[in-house]
Image (tube, rainbow, N blue to C red; front, top):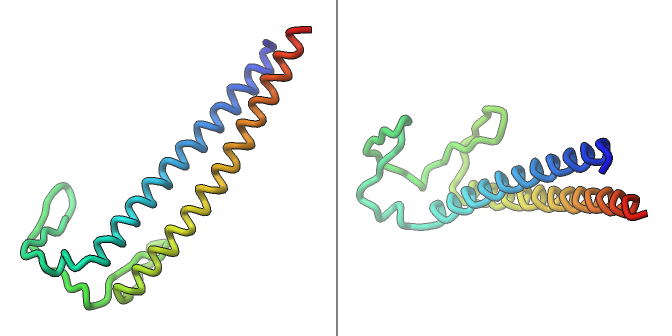
Length: 130
């Protein structure tokens, strides 16, 4: 196999690995957002008598949660807004849809890269047979 073809195949493999890592990271975000929606939708927090709030570095403090008052929600670039729990849940559901669209685009890119890899590999294999 010629060096340039081998380099091209290695490059495509690295791109596929990069796309796979991005898909994995986004899937983890989707799971985290789904968990947050479940928590916000559940009355379990209201019924819990003990609430520990992380203050960082593995340290927790006893605290109270008032889910009926506004939640402070990040909307990007270090900007936060106050909104009702129901609005936050809807925002999170929209975020999941956006993340799923991103996953689909990445899957399409991955398919294209795999097709390119197979084309380069098959073309080189055909040349070597002749």
